[in-house]
Length: 97
Image (tube, rainbow, N blue to C red; front, side):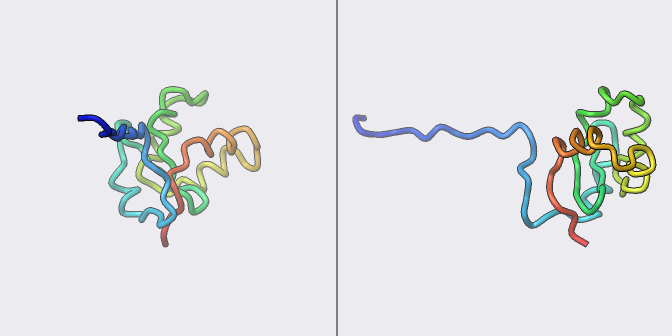
């Protein structure tokens, strides 16, 4: 079997961001602490791994699971750079309206 090369599979630990985007129905389907998505400012975020780390407690995040969390996020964090920067790390892709 000389000359044969076996391709190495690429494993992705997180969902791959998509240009096509996500629907609100997809966000609503991920509405638990085990799979927590939220739409904020027309973008979809997977907040599942942030639940246990949020300084304000898990409840602040689980209340956003499966919802449009824009008002709650802005109401709590306003224009603060650090929360917005942290949120960016959980981005899945745009919300299709």
